[in-house]
Length: 170
Image (cartoon, rainbow, N blue to C red; front, side):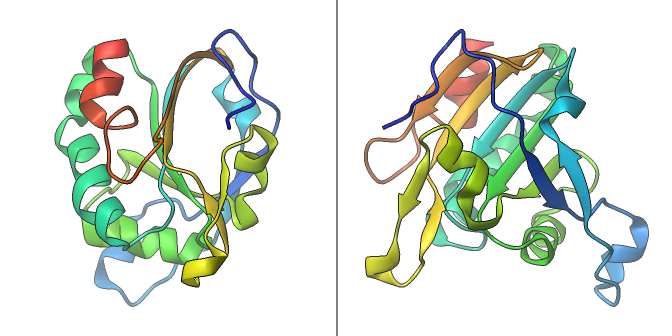
């Protein structure tokens, strides 16, 4: 159950990610992870959506691709940052981003051990299926660090955290 709600200011946190460079395209370079702080989102409109895991079937086929396809629509609605977050390490998130063609459009953030997601009540224990503690499937719209929308999936699949639903809430 999410502890964060509309009107709340998000807790401070950090994510690791590998910034996009054209050198990553060859697959011969891994890049150097850097840290992004939620404080970097002050004064910005942010769409943050979370998947339980990079390269997993629903995340890879149904959740991320519509965000890529509708990226320009998000920008047209004044979104400064679109980011996907998962508990995978930053190298896996970078690799997934390269496979999916994110380039410098959508940030692929690592929430190691789902630490930040847990702080807002949106971690998920998938130990029973061999995946450990993960981020839940959710989406947030943030404006100057204040939550404007929370969409948490109550069942398998993508609906309230999907690109179409989030676009409709902007």
